[in-house]
Length: 352
Image (cartoon, rainbow, N blue to C red):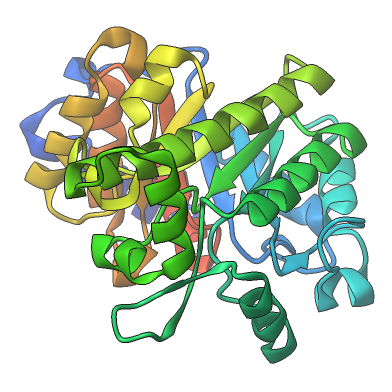
């Protein structure tokens, strides 16, 4: 008789998922020694606010290698920034990036500073007013103001680049991870924003919808190029990673993310496609494109939306997605996001 019923239950569960999609454990590809197993940490405070060491003990115990910790955006900073406004979290419980880095020492887990770029969902009314006066917001066709910001606005781009530079110079992070480096999904928004139209027409001799799509993609690419230059000038070993939409090539025209060309040009070290779906065939189609050619596969970390976009993936589903990414030869996986539900799932899906 087993002394610990919980251990027995876990053993039964693991035996059940070992035949995911009909494959035996011995027939599945094993994790490589350098496989990346990351988590996005959205709160910026760790799983246990005020106790980063406990968060890292949990991550290490479950084989996590990297953490993308949300440190800020144009409207907030959970660290001691001189560029971005400090958040209530930073003002009340301290510099979270410093605390996170301190707790990571000796664990072998790499810390990446996760920065939101062209979106400002957390802006206060005062900030919204200030951003509007600066012309940072995109407009919808009805004239309303979106939370999405204008990637072509020079002042906004400069401010974000200064924040990237500050992070690279001030904190010993393993990487800088950018998010929302994209346009709003509807092309009509760009056409409805007067400042965008003015810049586009001043830079493109023959305006057209196709030209607008290409121009938007170039604006994103040049921003990434500038960010990479700043990061690598400080320390070439700092990883530069970007969260992207997973469906290619539709993301080029829809949000200006031509991530295959980024990889070809060496603009980023890794892309992290948000392959958020509970549809196995759709997930497989995403990673099939991301894994070709092999050089791209080695620079792709598949984002798995355990609880993203109202998803609630089972441990069996998450395990299958991990194994599929591994079989495709991707560099690793990243789980969204670090919460109680993910903690319950990690013991069954992360370990090789």
